Length: 201
Image (cartoon, rainbow, N blue to C red; front, top):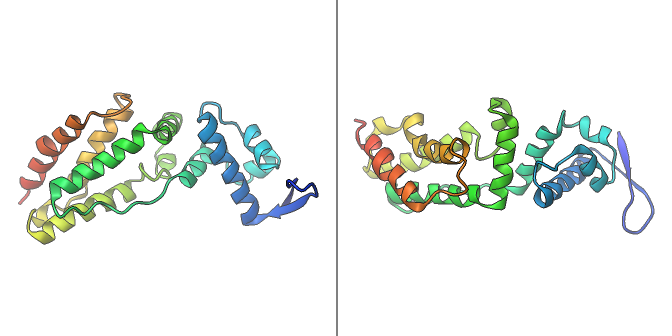
């Protein structure tokens, strides 16, 4: 099915399929960036995209699902850090996450998490909250340490690998802090993560 749109030149054109979906996602991402999720509505997105709400509801069941899809448009995938040192790698990973979660985009992320209310399926669609994505990055860092001889192979367990990121996420999600001081990140790595890794094997 196609939808009419009114381009700047005046004559209406019809968009369909992927073109219409991308136009909606761009409009939704712009709306999220400008207003945040609290003011995010299907009406506003439809108006900005030059389409009707039915076109949105055929693709996303509610504003939360659309908001998560729009948020994904605003994020980019970043490779795990590789400083050559396990402590340095994990600190850099935590610092990246801290900067992101403390940014305006991170504010949107926290709004989405609050709206999801712990719904695992929805949270899994958020890049930073996907268990598979977070675990893969943390296991990559820990796997490099094992290959260098800095950690025992027994340390390569998903819960061990991700414990630092989970603890940092809890600072934001559970305690509701606007940003984590760097000494909290250092404590997480030095007092919890590294002793746990070194205690394996």
